[in-house]
Image 1 (tube, one colour):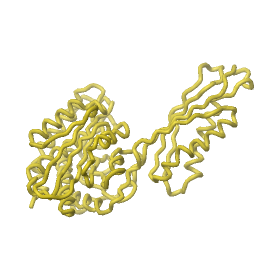
Image 2: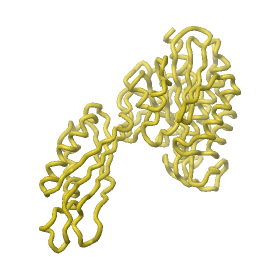
Image 3: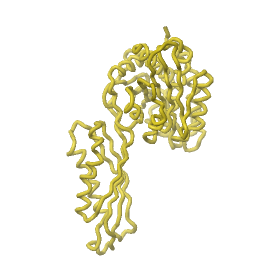
Image 4: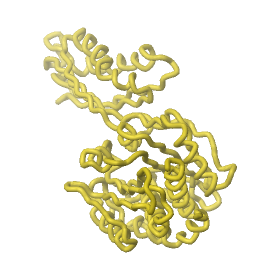
Length: 392
């Protein structure tokens, strides 16, 4: 019987070394070439077979247990962000303008540590464990690329977690229900008729129409949906016009939709069109629409998997580690995997005021409490072992 906490503690220095190398060598989404080479080299040292995919960075790997059983997948994301890190701390980024400012270096290091433990004890496993080191989490649905290439074939369940700056070090949250929102993008082109600003009656002002459309869009979250269903509709860009005294003939609006309710989210393209088109026409303009479905809402639909994950966290962090955490309107493309197979996703805190680790994700001074990392390794291992044991 594995003493997972003890085994994870034994891998602490290895996990730290991995995290520090990864932090010093960050790469942007879908450009994680050296990162992928590093991961593959580490897995091959362990004797774990690795699979790469054409036109994809990242990789998957399989650990075959000594006994028959199901297959569980453990996921880590590997990309960094276009942020300049201050050069005043150890192991800071050596790649100008690129930084691990979201904790993905920690996720990758934790999963490599878990791979070592699981490979060394594979004879005890009642089933198989598949590892996925995923590219491009920061830019949308890149997890879908692995699905298209068959990475989920034969996988019965998937587990993922995120190191989280809004929770104290040593706490965790793994609960059923809505956890993170979708992140969709819409573009609206308002077309009018140019005219001189001194004779506006000769044209149809696309800027005026677009401004009215921006205001009208707020009718959707405030009046069209149930008050308990969270919804954000934000127009972040308005592009148009050529000169201060010319009525714009065309204006482009670009925005985002965040929602948790799946049917509500799926209805948004039609809702946006139904609201905007008549407003634009009222100003003598026309409207064209484009809607991009990004990462879907991340919803933990399997309470039994949440229980396994919560128990794994308690094993590694202590019986009183679990904390409530409001759902987040940020997105996470782990949700794409959940469209295909059962799974669970949760959060492990690392904020530590005594160490000055207080910055939120995507901040230039972001850092991790490294004392949490070996425990995260243990959570990966514990979840995998318990899932396979409970599904013999």
